[in-house]
Image (cartoon, rainbow, N blue to C red; front, top):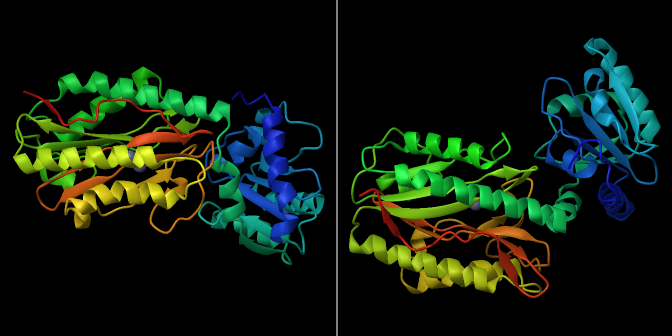
Amino acid sequence: MSENDFSPSLIFRQNMLTQKLPGSGIDCIAINAGPMLTYLTGLSFHLMERPVVLLLPAGRPPAIILPELETAKLKGLPGGFQAFAYGEDPSTWPAVFREAVQFTGLEGGVVGVEPSRLRFLELSYLQAAAPQARFVSAEESLAALRMCKDAQEVSAMRRAVQIAQQALQATLPAIRPGLTERQIASELVIQLYRAGSDPELPFGPIVAGGPNSANPHASPSDRPLQAGDLLVIDWGASYNGYISDLTRTFAIGNVQPEYAHIAALVKEANQAGREAAKPGFPAETVDQAARGVIDRAGYGKYFTHRTGHGIGMESHEAPYIRQGNTLLLQPGMAFTVEPGIYLPERGGVRIEDNLVITPTGAECLSDLPRELLSIGS
Ligand code: ZN
Ligand code: ZN
């Protein structure tokens, strides 16, 4: 979305949030630079040494505290949205925070924050400006707000998946024994940019060969690929601030029969998980469906992580696809299905797809082959 286009959907999102505040005992939301601020305003700021804070009070106009040099971004914000800009001298910043606190009436109130995002920097200025305010986690209301994607968000995610798939397909022909994980990862990053990813990738690609593929969170090393390796590639692109997060596993030349066996199991588990994703069912049923396939085949203890996580503006958000999550899936919820089997010191397989729940089932945004393809020979 353009920064000067304050669309009705942004006002809708703000209202959705602030209308629910009184019920949750929160008087005002305070958000610093990051995906949530972008989600609510269409504005994006980098986390930097200068604080940026959005204040959304219930029943009052919103305010934003920001450096003067960033105020050009505010063009197009609706009337009533008050900016409090400060100059380069940090000694003047506390007074600007106090003005914003008075405008939003948050002194003495309960201020909801994002516990995993709000930094000490912003919190200190807010606390100094509103010493009587009480700061609490608003994690639940904020996560719920972003969980169901609208059509515009889904189409950005669909594009992020296409870009990622195109980038991998452009990278595969170059993969051969002797190439290191790092060399493959750097080629993939080039191809992601070439295919049209936003400059900020959702995460650095995981390229893990041989024994490294048994580590779900390996980072690319200088180990050269060898014939007989499994190769796990977990990568994603961003498009208009929305991300994709995919994994495919390859065989370098011929692999031992057990590797082909676990690859077939993971493919089956991935399919079972995708087929279980339906509106009205608890998130955990997707995990149970995928895990059941691997458990029944006797490899349960080698599937060491949850089946998936929500995706959207971030690569880890609600809903989490894990045992015990009874949250009912609803149209617009987007998440990964990514079962894996990891044989310690030997090799691993993971197959990850991106899904969006629809009124009747789920749309799988990714469609690269899931078979264990042999490459590099
Ligand atoms: Zn992934
Ligand atoms: Zn993932």
